Image (cartoon, rainbow, N blue to C red; front, side, top):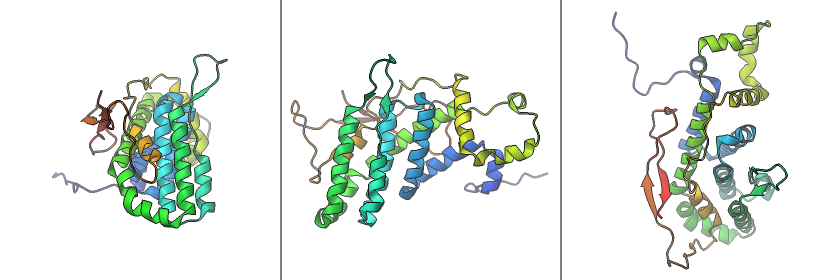
Length: 282
C-alpha cells in the first residue's frame, strides 16, 4: 500500500495536536509562535507565563535573565500601546506591574537582593513612557526616528534568545513520561477520563505539576547561560530620547559584540534554527 506524503507546510488541526503533544509543550510552542510572529499584543500573556513558572521553579532562569526577559516583553507591549494610543489609564497599570526578580540569598537571615542595573533601567523606562504620554511632539519624534532603531530586530532577537532558553529548560524539566510512569501516577479514582479531559483548563494543576517535576531533579543549573545575555535589552530601555549611547570613558567607544552559537539543552521545540547568542567582546 502506497504511503501518502503530507505537504511540507501542512499543519495538524489544533484538536488533533492536543492529542499528540503534551499540554505544556503545546503551550510552549504557542508562546514561541507569539514571539516569532511578533504578536506584540500577546506579549503580556507570555510575560505572565514566564513569571509564574519562574516563581514556582526559581531555577528555570537566573533572576538576571528572568528580569531581562520579563522586562523586555512588558516594555515592548507598553511601547506598542503607547504607539497606538495615549490613554494613560490603559498604559499605567502595565507600568506598575513591572517587577524585579529577587536574587536568592545563601542565608535565610540575609536581606534579599535585587538587580540594581535592572532597577535603574525600569526607572529610566518609566520616565521615557511618562514623557511620551505627556509630550505629543516627543512621542511623534520617538516613534518616527528612534523606535525602530532602539527596539527593532536586535531587541527582538534578544527576547527570542531568552524565551527560547526558558522554553528549552521548561521542556527539560517536564520530559514526556513513559507509559509505565503514567500508569503509576494515574489515580484510580473515577471518573478518570473526565478528570483528564478537564486537566488543561485548571491553571492550579500546572503549578502542581511544576512543583512535582522539580523534585525529580530533571532541571540542570542555569549558570551555563552567558551572563551578558539580554543586556542589549537594558541598553535599549535605558536610552534617552536623543537615542545617543553613552561612551565608555576608558575606551571612548561602546562595547563591541561578536556572534556565537550555543547548543540547546535538548532537542528543538520547532523546526526553526536555534536563536543566535550574542556574546560581549572581552
